[in-house]
Image 1 (cartoon, helix red, strand yellow):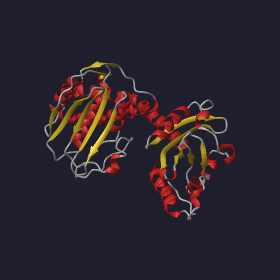
Image 2 (cartoon, helix red, strand yellow; image 1 turned 90 degrees about the vertical axis):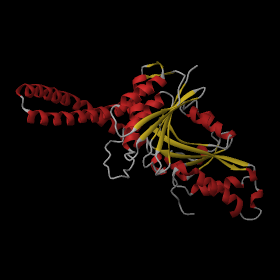
Image 3 (cartoon, helix red, strand yellow; image 1 turned 180 degrees about the horizontal axis):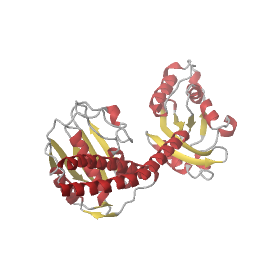
Image 4 (cartoon, one colour; image 1 turned 135 degrees about the vertical axis):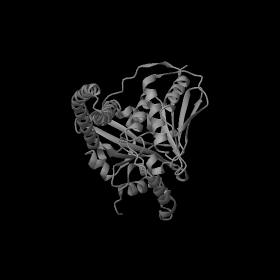
Length: 384
């Protein structure tokens, strides 16, 4: 059987392959042996290039492929029959994984990109990305849990090194930029007194670009802080309805191209950092205007449920493709410009919005039909 490279997210495809093998490819009568489903599963999984593990309902390891044994420097003899629950005392970080897997045994569901960091004497610090799916083969009264594992230790190390570099550069740039700004202000004051209009004009251009550079450095600093430590939050009870109206009213004065329309009302207060949520609203409104240059309005919709409030910002621009929607909250990702306008930005705004909402225990999502605009929504929990 030819070796295949299967990304760990493709477990649904592997499930179909397993089921097809059980239902059509087995020789007549061979499925009378109750162990045969495992045998067939092993044969198929062995062809996968990435580490794959098969568990039974009790979370006991039934099988692993060669890639698994090679990656974790173990053997079938040492691995088969081990139960994930019994390993949690040695590796406490496995407890959350065991809890998630237990949930799969009673539901026809799956989970993706569960990140597991652990330390062992054999491997040192490791970071794994785990995807799991329940394989239902009811016709044969056989169910499996299929785990796809990816070692992302090196990737996370590189990301930390990049973050440290960004943190160092932004820190070192702040002092010279502050000095330049101070000297610009001194020169502007001097030329106002002398009445030198040309110098005033040129200095204003320098000041604008310095201000832009300051904004870029501050954006990088926020990303570094969000990535390496938790953002500092000053949570207080806030009237979110009032905050939305204040932000929209102030922003409307700065834009003549779009009408900002609020629909709905929030009656419940939330416990949140007012400045951070203000930042979230500003980012979403700026993006809505930026990516709908031919439209004339943005709709901000307010809704609430018993346990959460939801704010949505809808634009009527060119929309986001399904593929772009998967990456839109990643650092430095930018939606492709479908117009002749050169849309500026670093692709950091939505990443920061996502980090802020996550640290408020909320959710952020996007809905978009390509060519018909986008709606970015976030929810915040309401504590009774």
